[in-house]
Image (cartoon, rainbow, N blue to C red):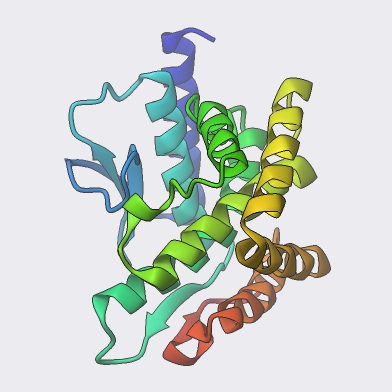
Length: 244
């Protein structure tokens, strides 16, 4: 698909999101997106759908197009489909809030990626499969390449587990090229062999997801509560949402 086709598809999709949510979309640039390698991020605002993009990356470059569509869809979940967002108790550390938000992102991204795939965008960026290959090779060597993302042990475990859950979800719910399916299966097998604690947590999460329909707001909320409970994070927040 050409750049012009991508840009037209993105513009049409953003107009659709604005129409369905009755929220204007604002796109702003920043060099601080929170996690290394991110191209964009969604920031909650009651009046707008705010998308923060990495400064200096062309807006209609293929991966950026997908990222913008992805972040806009986070707004669609909240403002149109009634999905939950966290309301944190007072006096929590920034790190604890960051850890909790990562759990939300892990589950939300499965739904978001499916929606953008259904609207003609790639479910993942061009760097995802190469990253999976690197992670697979590292796991087979017993190397932990996830530690640079945070010095916090809990964040580290959630992030590591989320990589397994997202890979499982792509195999479970998405239409993938056979070579990509093999890469993801290889990754899951390598993860199982070399990271038993996180693999066990990941399998508990996939079982929770499988028992709930996360593609509607109530099933998503029910699954989210159980997943947060695996780390005791359900005790520090309330779910703020309108259930169908």
